[in-house]
Length: 155
Image (cartoon, rainbow, N blue to C red; front, side, top):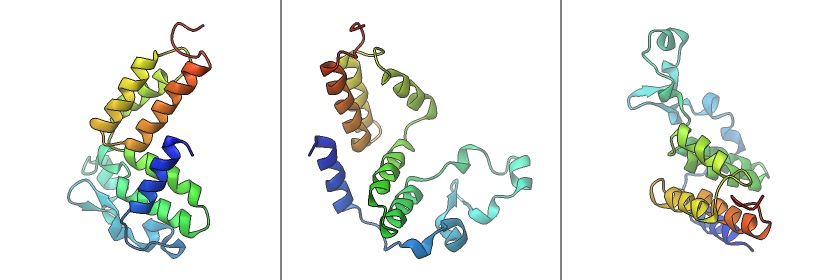
């Protein structure tokens, strides 16, 4: 079992969420009260009029980590537990600015980064954004790239 699998298992075992099952899907229809828009708006406030008059902004329409975790719980209850891992990673990335996610994505492409640069990204994910699962993936990528000669300067 890799370090990332161990971390995922530990996080899955420790996730404290209310019981959510397949009967809660789709969340927007079954539990619109779970969906928070910005600080003081609800799902019912999402209307074309509110979007057009800037009462609701694009930034406020971002999905929350809480809803992503609930989606993962629903997937698990529906017999698809591995999808929960994807939702947990996504829940972590919600905290990372879009521009930084794209920079990290480009840095993870073969021959773009040194091992040290990748490990610095992993540290940033872990410390600045509290994203240990994603940090584990970047650490694992650094090791694989080193073994397969895919780091900056290897080509």
